[in-house]
Image 1: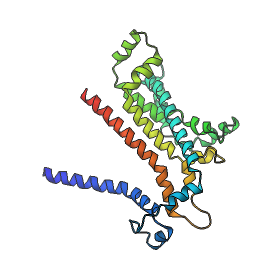
Image 2 (image 1 turned 90 degrees about the vertical axis):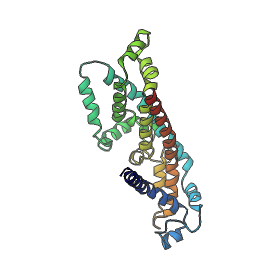
Image 3 (image 1 turned 180 degrees about the vertical axis):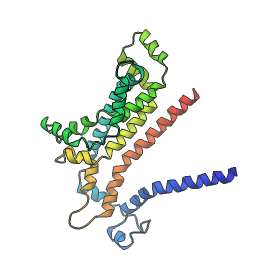
Image 4 (image 1 turned 90 degrees about the horizontal axis):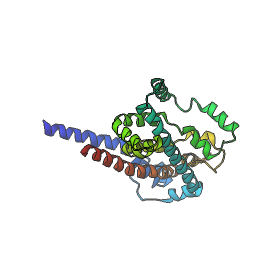
Length: 272
């Protein structure tokens, strides 16, 4: 019975992996096909010959380097700003005793159910009146505070013993030193997860950069992929898929790095 259960679990995991990875593999395969082959046999999973011309066409059609740098700067800046602000907010909600703490935590939780599209009009109006439209500040500042990040950090700090904070205070440490130098390394796995979630979400975001940019100066890579659809001649699927592969590569690289850090940190804590 144990052997059968193990085989069934393995089969289900393999099936889930195929269903999850399958679309990405299909995207990679299509990016190496010629347009004639796609039209002739679109259901064939493996290209007859590897044709990398679609990737060259992507770099010729749009300024990939500039868009990639804009996207990277925006996503990293948002993630770091969210971590910098979530640490003191989570610390206050987890370790400080003040009137209205439960109300403040309730407001943070309420913000989790409000999509950013709901607040788009007032935020856009405010940024427009300040002359920040089509600037990197307009892409970063509206997302600098994360209710989800505050919740994650708060939950992680609840597990930190109060004796560590009291010992730091007896040594003369300031509140800022306690938050960033004492508690920050302790909740590092949570911060790594928050950075990963934030980076992936904003790196792939299409709606906000589309609304807040007017030229290529600060546009992001997801907008560049949308520009690959040639008007009037239909979709050039091999070029579009090549653009999506280029778009997804940094996310995969970051996930591999972050996953190793999270697993090593969790394992070290479990063994300690």
